[in-house]
Image (cartoon, helix red, strand yellow):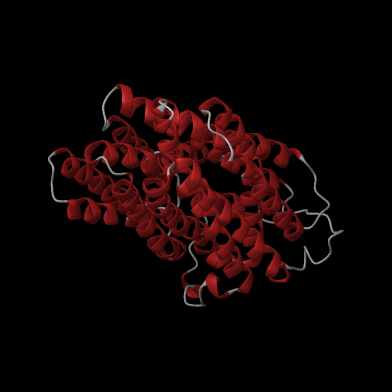
Length: 394
């Protein structure tokens, strides 16, 4: 479509760091302190700060426009990330790492939500929106395939700080380029900015709880897998293992986007959650890094269908003037979950070893299924009221 190529490319590079920051911080701090618990706590702090700030930045974008909000925030984020690396480099007190981590996360923006909001503005009500959301999910998984492997390679073979430096360059240049493309941005609707928050909508609250549990899976798997690779003398392969997890999601996202569905969104969502939980069972039983790569690939197959369907439900449940904030709640929920998962994964890995710590990831996946099934009726919309109704819009 005319006018979309630029913001798609800029949005891709601008959100590359979402798969690079966490593992980059874990690799840096664990190498300097020798503790995965400390590394996980700092990584969790970044994720937690992002989770708290994302809905606020989403609301500000809905009120003032993307460019006005994104550019100052990304510059602050870059300055804070530089501060974090300098504090780590020169042995500053541990509290300075946490303090700078708060600013790094708080100034991060949910660029994926901004990209999807542009697609909704351009294609709202069209059958093409399903394909656009699927495409963006595949782009996310390409990021999660390439990002961890790239950061791990740079951090272990070039310099401990190289991966985070690359993340810094990508996020600043990509976000600024994205923000400056104003022609495709959703319009600002100032008169409707005080009409409540999307989180008060029961379906959005339910989705947020589900994605909180899924985020805990992502955060714990990220940290535990780094420790698993090191325990099996393959630390340099940690990024490839995490890339396998995202690779399964990327493949399923392509398949899901091409498929025409006649099952309602809410039923698709619950089924994808069930497959996600079942897919995590093999990683509890494996003690070889090569076999683990295959198991993580299979475990990731249900991620994209779940996330695509979740964003599609948000697009239908949330009023248009609150759409960016509504989508940001998905990022917030995942961010809280990642923070919890990184913290718990670090503690459990130090206490029981990485193979046993994967049980926490599986338990979180089961919790996501339970919440999704229990509250499935809240996801009913006019378009998805019947399980036989075809999905035609988001």
